[in-house]
Length: 98
Image (cartoon, rainbow, N blue to C red; front, top):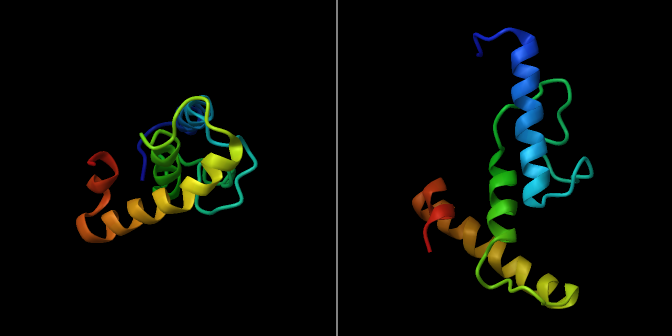
C-alpha cells in the first residue's frame, strides 16, 4: 500500500522501469512474469525478484566485454541456476554476494 497520490506512484514506476531498461533488460518485451515491464495495471514501483536475477545475470563477472552472443548464451543458464540455488539457500542477499 502506498500513501502517495497516484500521479507520484506512476512517476516512480516510470523511473524504475526506465532505469531497468538503461541497465540492459529488454524493454517491454519481457516474456517472464512478474516484471516491471508486464504489469501496466499495477504499475510496480519496485523490481520483481525475476528482474533482479536477470539484472544480476547481465552483470555477472563471467560475462566479459567482447564475448560473442553464442558464448554468452552458453553461460547464462549456469549463471541463473547458480543465483537461484544461492537464493534458495541464503535468500535474496545471495544476489549480491559471490
